[in-house]
Length: 201
Image (cartoon, rainbow, N blue to C red; front, side, top):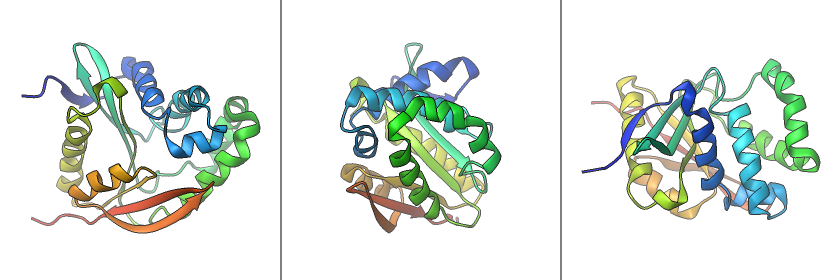
């Protein structure tokens, strides 16, 4: 049996959840491309970016995997039409994003624009980021996070969308019914956009 629990994120989990995503994405191809290949900078960007623009948003639906009182995995999702930040949200976070990204801001903005262009214009759940702390990877935590959340998606009879720049993740998501429906080269990184049709039972 799994020695971790999957549950909704609480307010007091936020800092730990951001740390998990920072460590999980320190070697992420897109993140490294934005910050010039520095894993420490990629981790800092992800830690703050997750809080500002992902799991800290009002519309975020976040699951965490907890083991021995510590958050070890995170799955973030947002419902359409709130997958992408509104103009007002962008305006509110602009000063923090400028301070966080500095000279990397144009590269980050390009990536976010391209990803937003591929966001489906129909009701769905947009998954991501999904991350597991590196020392806990390979234990099935990511699979269990997906299993639990996609059960909620299926109960609502809705499709799901995500993007990935990691080859092994494409295979994982395909096992859950996602299919690659588009690709885009962002700063030389091959990004796959994946779609999971609404399940009928």
